[in-house]
Figure 1 (cartoon, rainbow, N blue to C red):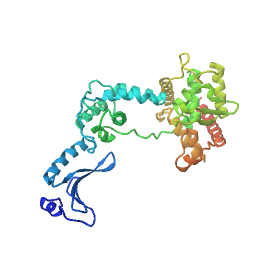
Figure 2: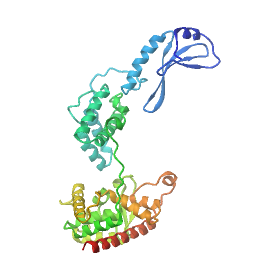
Figure 3: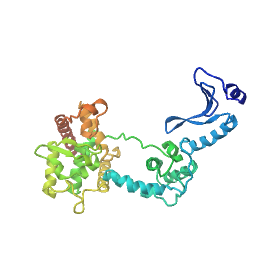
Figure 4: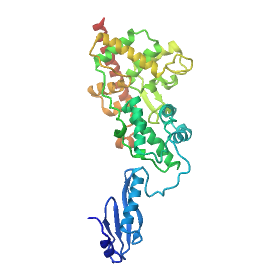
Length: 401
């Protein structure tokens, strides 16, 4: 039941054995002290954390005055500000472009080069938009929704969701640097403006892997692009781990590929064994391009094979495979990772081994105490995988010849 003025008068000055908290409405409470002092309290949640703030005492603030003050505090909360933080006069409008520029100048250079490139590209297209000139601290929710609706209309709802994540990253950083005090958009969920990316499910069956391998062998592409695709299939590594690999990372004598921390997604050194089939491919690349610089050189001196070049090649392979089998579903190089994990799991290879092959960190207690990388177990699994590829490719080659 809501408080009344008469009830407050009865409580004022009345001694209590314990402090009592009596609710009014909308997060407003009155705290009754041991000696009868009454204090107005506002309870609320901000960024998932339960908070409370003192608003003043009764009768200095009457019930009507406390409720009136509550309205302004709840409005600030709705706009994305912590009501506990004093409202300051904004001397200069702070735009999204301003915050983004500061973030690009100060924070982004501390990140990995690849991450820097991704952030700079997205920020340039969406966050540095000179047409969106509202103050991020005072912009209404409706203005933000129009901004993201425009992104979704021009691209997709999934992309709008990704842009929202980046905007929140930039503005949280800006708040930590005291460029802003808050923003309504920080409370937005992705579902309000877009969609989350769907988790990939595609993994190739062995006859598909065999046909793909056979089509690579029959294609007229350069040795670089053909062998790049083959190594991605064999290792199940991330696209950039193979494309941008330096020849010096591969020790054929010891049979170890060492991915340095600066190129690893986890920021830690990653070791993979090199199966015989991969050794043969690397030796072929050495004979064609030499054994210095990038393992798989690009079209221009001192560059590696680009992501667009690899993507276009895989699309061409898919189209040729469709000519042979109309039921063949689309795939991307990233699906090779899901493929090797799924097919080897079917053969009884244990999860901790396939996780290491994929370059994943082990979860739970194992991540803390177990630093072993199961090189011998990985090698055994890779050799099994290469045997499965060869057998499937031979079978498909016989079928289509």
